[in-house]
Amino acid sequence: MIRRLRILASAAVLLLGVLGMQAQDTARQESRRSALQKEIAQLERQIKENASKSKNALNELTLVRKQIATRRSLVQESAREIRQLDDSIAAGQAEAERLQQKLETMEQYFRRLVRSAYKNRDARVWYSYLLSSKDLGQASRRYTYLRDLSGQMNTQGQKIKDLRAGLEENLARLASLRQEAEAVRQEHERELQGLHKEELRSDQLVTSLKKDKNLYQRQLESKRRQVEALNREIQRIIAQAIEEERKKEEAARRNKQTAGKAARPVDYKLSADFAANKGKLPWPADGPVVEGFGRHNHPVYTTLVMPANNGVNIGLSDGAQVKAVFNGEVKHVIVMPGYGRCVLVQHGSYFTFYCKLGQVNVKAGDQVGTGQVLGLVDTIDGQTQLHFEVWQEKTPENPENWLRPRP
Image 1 (cartoon, one colour):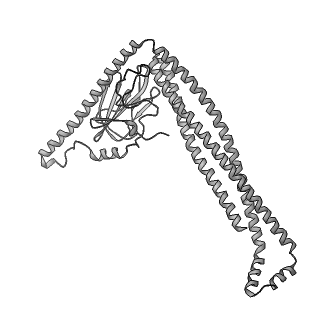
Image 2 (cartoon, rainbow, N blue to C red):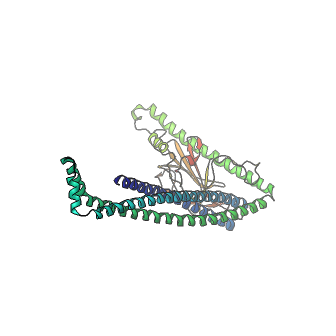
Image 3 (cartoon, rainbow, N blue to C red):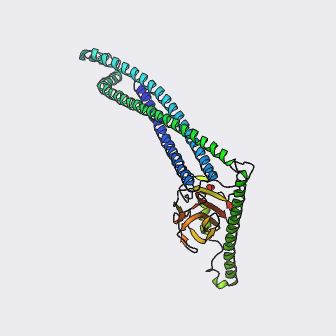
């Protein structure tokens, strides 16, 4: 019987472990779902701001398509959560039924044991049992068994009570999981309805945009000139910063007495610290990426190639704070057509660039720390976005590879 109780206890522990892991996974899914819902809400605000400020259908289409992609991720997340909840409920229910069957078997066995002890409660029976022993060793063992029998029955009875209480608790947890699954199903249906509406809005915008291809070709050419001008300026000021530091080191070499005190072309420790934090840097602002790194085709005229994006565009609300992603020195604050005010921060041999700011809180030469507010984002051409770039010396890199993953 003790062996059976141990098996039953192990099964109960296993069920508790399964339910505990399910609770942890559900918490992670809830965090992911909340992040996606937050991103959708941010995009919806930006769509409304775009409609009220610029009436720019292309900007709106970009935001709506990003919202659709996010909504699809949310739909997939909720569908996956429903499947996992259903699987956990089925597994938990099956395990609970097995526990119930074992518990009933143990209770029947325990009742027979109690009845047997009751029928043989006459002390003469116990004396006969002891006196019939073959030798003193057997008599001693029988005496110990009889002496401990009452205590064992009490202990085993308490174990059965505890296991029953644990089983009832597990069944209550299963009921809670069922309620949670139903709530997720209802939310899933609402998400599907929202996705359908957004897809319809996207189709309407595409129809509107297709009416004037020449207009968007002109806008694309204007945008290309702005991007090329920005890229040339970034390359120029980075090359200038590197050249200035190189000259300082050459001057230091010519004067051996001051070589140890002269500035170096690159702060190697800062460079190493920055590189060591690849994939861990904080985001410069809290918002969704509406345009990623690299080249992209026009969202409507797919044969038209958009200018290469050397960074990412992060959708924000008007006036949102923009923060430095790492310790460094402000090298330049410039103004560029289509990009507003831009701040370049040097981190040894790495550079980060923050564009489309309205208000700037820093100036060239300032030392800034991680998380320090550099300025506030502005609305330019109907878009309220931060343009953010990361360069390793003269080479642009995908900022999303450097920033910490989002939930």
